[in-house]
Structure formats: C-alpha cells, structure tokens
Amino acid sequence: MKSVIFIAPPAAGKGTQSAMLESLGYVHISTGDMLREEIAKKTTLGLQIQDIMTHGGLVSDEIVGNLITKKLTNLNKPFILDGYPRTINQVNLLNDLFNKLNINDYVVIYLEISLEEALKRALGRLTCSCGSSYNIYYENLKPKQDGICDNCGKPLQKRSDDNEESFKVRFENFIKNNEPIKEFYQSIGKLHTINSENSSEKITEEIKEILKND
Ligand code: AMP
Image (tube, rainbow, N blue to C red; front, side, top):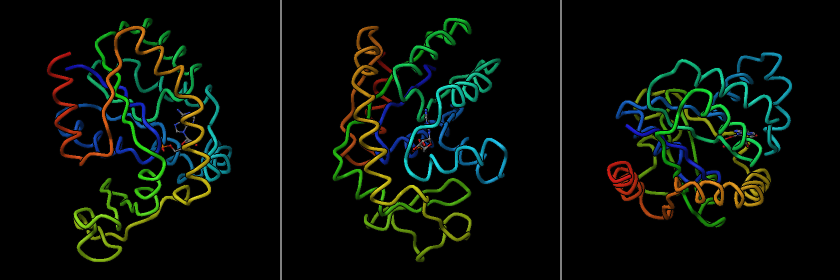
C-alpha cells in the first residue's frame, strides 16, 4: 500500500479521509493531533505552543520536524501524513528524511476547497475525544443528540482554533505557503488534486482510485 501525504487547507476533510484510510490499515500521523496532545498534557512543549496554536499560527519547523522524525523512524508501515509538510522548508526536511529512511512509495493528495466552504465546515465542526467528528451545519453529519457523541456518549467539543478569526489566519497561511509545495510535488510526479467540496463518500472513492492506479 502506498503512503499518503495530504496537503489541504484547514477543514478540507483530511481528518475524515485519514480516519477512512486508518480503517484500511494505515498509520495516521497528524501533527495537529500530536501538538494538541502536548497542550492537553501541559508538557513544556505544550505550554510553549499553546498561544501560537490558539491564534492559528504555525509551530516551528524544528518542533514539528522532530515529532515527524520520531514517528517515521522504524515505522515500516504505510502511513498518512495529515498536516505535514506545511511549508517548503518542511517539504525539504521531509524529503531528506524520506531519503534517509528509503521511503519512496507514496502519493501526495491535495484537497482543494474555497474559503467560504471551509469556513462553514470549521464553524460547525464538533469533535469527540474518541476521534469521531460531527458538523451541526450538515444534516447528515449532525450528532443524533445535541452535543453528545453517537459512538461513545461523551460530550462533544469545539476546537479552540475553530473560530472565524483564527480560521482565516490558518486558511491564509495555507494559501501563502502552499504554491511552492504543490509545484515541488508536481515536479516529481507525486501530486493528485481532488475537489474537496464534493461529498466525503465521493472524495473517498477518488482517493481509492488514485491509490489503485498510481
Ligand atoms: P491541524 O489540526 O492540522 O489543523 O493543525 C492545527 C494547528 O497545529 C495549526 O494551526 C498549527 O498551529 C499547528 N500545526 C499543525 N501541523 C503543523 C505543521 N506542519 N507546521 C506548523 N504548525 C503546525
């Protein structure tokens, strides 16, 4: 199985599609989840990055690079990178790491979405600590009972950075950094683009098609 790198603005659906791939046996590596875990545990690193994340800024390349290096070293399984790389410098660091670890069997999937659609998704998004995700603005994604997880019954939470102001900073950061990233992966023949405004089922179908044919 080929590994997958998702490059996508926030709320484009990379979490949902990563969960789908996880069920097929992929190891899901999300830098955002790893960083949120550090904050939740109030580690030294967590305290250092809390403010940056709440305001939608980017954590340093060195910090996220170290987290990724630890995860990929000795993994030897197909994986999904969700949220990394996010800058051209991170692309170069990842490329060096892939060369060192002999990783070449992967595709890069760009999930394309407009600011308006992504903002709607982010403002309606609710998540559960069990990993389930909901959206109050979409009938088919609402929890059965307001604010409660269908799968485990725990109360749902809103991410602190899913507010309009922080979301726009995150989206603009993405657009600013993404062009050279796309160009690089295009130039080495790894890039596939999917319209992420379609339903999640359609996106899943397209991802499976890419993995089958590449
Ligand atoms: P995400 O869950 O991918 O939307 O990431 C949430 C937040 O974590 C981002 O807004 C950044 O503050 C931080 N973050 C996640 N991945 C990275 C990365 N590759 N580089 C820098 N900051 C990151």
